[in-house]
Length: 154
Image 1 (cartoon, helix red, strand yellow):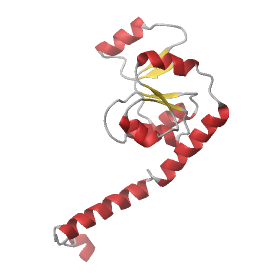
Image 2: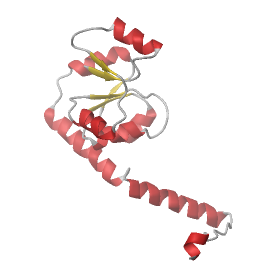
Image 3: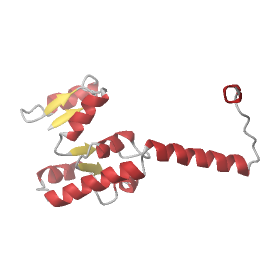
Image 4: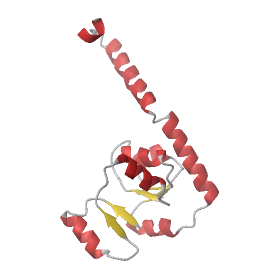
C-alpha cells in the first residue's frame, strides 16, 4: 500500500507512526504531474477519499490515467464516476475493496468508460466551450454589450 500526502504535519506523523508496517509505504505529497500520472497509471487501485466538493481535478486525472478507482461514496464522486468505480462509505469498507478480487473484464470496461468520459465530458475544449456559451447566454439575457479589447481591435 502506497500512501501519499503531507506526512510532516502532526496528523501525518501520527498516521506514519501508528500504521508503521513493512507493507505500507508513506510518501510526502508529489506535485510533479508526470510522476503523479505514472504513479496513478501503474497503480492497481486508486483511492479517492474526497467527500465534499464538485468535480475534483485529481479524480479526473486518475480517470485519464486509466485507473481502477475506489471513491468515497458521495453524490459528487457518483455524478462523475457513475457505475464505473468501487465506492466506500467509511473506513471499514476500504479493506473489503482492497481484498476484493476484481473481475478483470469489468475493471477493463470501467477504465475504458472513464477514459471516454474524460475525452467527451471533461475535455478542456468542451469545458471552455461550455463556459463560453454560458457567459454568452448570460450576456444576452442581461443585454450586456461586450466591448472588444484593445488587442482585439488591432
